[in-house]
Length: 235
Image (cartoon, rainbow, N blue to C red; front, side):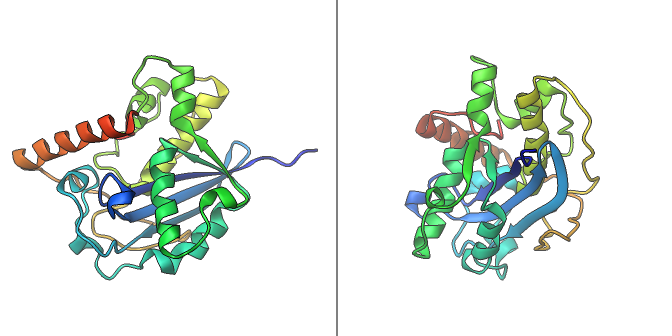
């Protein structure tokens, strides 16, 4: 009997839009499934980006550099992250965005890119566009369409988004609108506690934003859509 496929659902949060201009990863999370069953294994890190975070990015995920000072740097977690990804089909929503950031982080350490590793990148946004042409295919839009409960998603967080992505991906690939999968009642908070597979994050708290910050956020998303030509999964 052929072994079931190993999947890792991966998400990152960043300081801004473009890794080529020096923006960095501030959070990375992946959760594992074998076949169509979550195994309970996950990996989750908050990272010190060693630079300021754009106001538009903070409006999306809620983090500032002050929140992250003293957290591990990417170099200290890279080997654990890659060990978790190797041998898997790595599912990412709008994969080119996250892959570009991961590859730039690897390049900073003079390490090979993801394409040289024993893994396969699967872009769930491309799958969604093929299944639902002409429709909005952000992660939130797909949650609504497929009956996935995203009510906890007040702000973006890599671990929560990876869990939602797992549900969305299974819905996309089995052609069913809604199905049951238990999600934990707790998700990452802005009171950051770095963790790995055994950590249980605290409850997230919405942040009330000033009108000027909201305007910056809208401009940020508009520039992202124009630059990338794709819909980022926070729409």
